[in-house]
Structure formats: C-alpha cells, structure tokens
Length: 250
Image 1: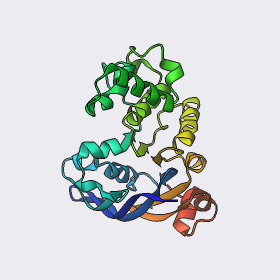
Image 2: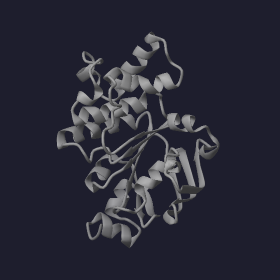
Image 3: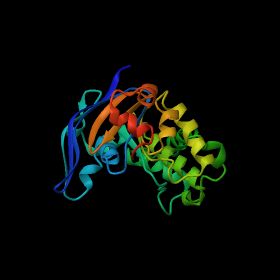
Image 4: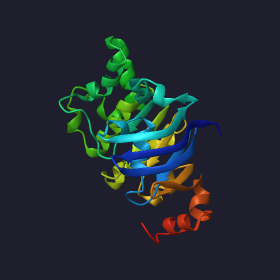
C-alpha cells in the first residue's frame, strides 16, 4: 500500500509544555488508521498538526515535517492544506444560522464556486457520500442545527467532503452520539476508506478494532507501536501496547 502522509520527527508544544516527541509515522493511502492511547497522550494534538490547526493556538509551535504525497505541508497555503486534509471534530458543529445546503456549500464558495448549478451538484454529491442525502433532500433550506446529533455529524462530514479532500481526519467522531448514530458513522467510514485516506482518533478500543486497517498506539506524546490493527490487538510487539489494549491501564 502506498504512503499518503509521511510524518517525520514531529514535535509539538503548547507554550513550554511539550505534547509530542519525535513522532514518525506513515499513513497509508485509501484505508483507515486509528490513533489510540490514554487521555492526554497527544492523539488530538497529532491530528491537529496534520492540517495545521495546532499552529492557531496561541503559544503553540511545531517542528519536524509532514508531507502529503511528497508535498511539505508547512510550505503550502493553509487554505489549500485544509482543503486537501479535511477535519471532523468530536462534537458536531454545523455553522449556526445556516441551512443544511449552505453548511455544505460553504467550502465550495470559499474555493470560488458560485454558479448555482455547480453548487447544487457539489452539495448533493457530498450529502450522498456522507449517507445523508435521502434524509435531508427535502429540507435543504432547514437549519443545519435542527438535525439530530448523528445527522449533524454526517452533515459535518459532508461539509468536509464537499471540497474533495485527499485525507479525512476525525477526532472522536462518535463520542457524543448514541449507539444507532455511531453505527451509521462506522458504516459510512467503511465506505469512505475506499476513496479517501482516513485517520480517526478514538478512545473506544472496540471501535478502533472494527473500523481500522492500521492502528497507532500513542503514550506520553510518543508512538509506542504501529501496525495492522489485527496484530496490534492480538499480538502486539510492545508490552505497553499489550497492557493498554487489554485494559490494564488508561
């Protein structure tokens, strides 16, 4: 499998506090990589570094390199980076005071798409990809915040997909959802990985086992082990990994 993201010697700080230490990791193309580890181990910081959100935190800084198909993302325009590397957050966050349609169209407008025909097509395609079209096709003018929690999260996924990213980052995308909504997101992820490179941070080890092809275990800001998910959960190389996946700490 080809490498899509190549991360080398990544270090991240919040002021004087270091959150990541020399993280080197390859993210394979068109598959799902799960990032697991106890709270405070640097998982979300790592994810936010991948599309340069981390640098927006006052006092935060990053060293090392992140390359997408060989391109150094630190040298790319930040808008370009976030179009190529989309992100979905833990809590559904539809834009307030915007309709379902306008939530999805927002990124397209940012890219200079203004013709109604193109917007209609782009919004519909994104909603179909996010598995939401059949539920909202007759209420595109309704507020995005009026949808259920699970629908709002899929709306946020559609918003990210509308600009056709190469990589989709998801930070605990199901933690605020009920089991039925969670199952829909997991089914969606199984489809998306055939077209996108997906990186998911999750505290739910059973979910990581279900949805991912590869898993990286983080601890105290470092990558302890990375490999095929089946091996990480059944026969990890590191004792620390074995203890974590078997519930002995964390």
